[in-house]
Length: 125
Image 1 (cartoon, rainbow, N blue to C red):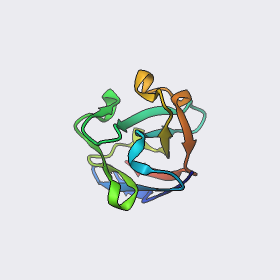
Image 2 (spheres, one colour; image 1 turned 120 degrees about the horizontal axis):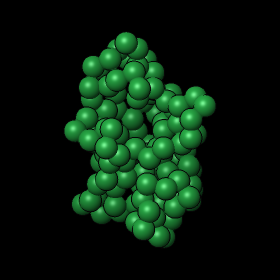
Image 3 (cartoon, rainbow, N blue to C red; image 1 turned 120 degrees about the vertical axis):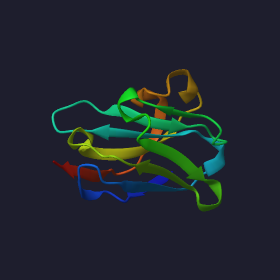
Image 4 (cartoon, helix red, strand yellow; image 1 turned 30 degrees about the vertical axis):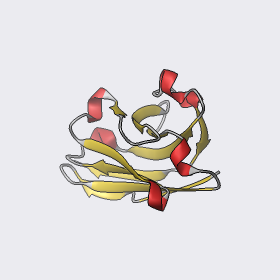
């Protein structure tokens, strides 16, 4: 499985970005997907996840109401729409493919089998 993340960049506080993660190498629609982020000197943290059929989504509290995860199975792509960005959202963002039991702990990095290379998001104040 290969994951290619894109869409990061520098934006002012209050602005928006949309991250994309295109998957290849396996049946995209068979697995849940997640987004995580890691700021300097901090542990990787869960941001959002979406079930394989796209019906259910999950978010960490700090991004609820601002971020939206979605997927397009025809394009093998998962998205993270980020609005009302804050300086504390600054991090490298990673997409990941959920393992067979990811739904038991969708916010745990250990439940994801494959990871993209990350894309930098920087929010200036």
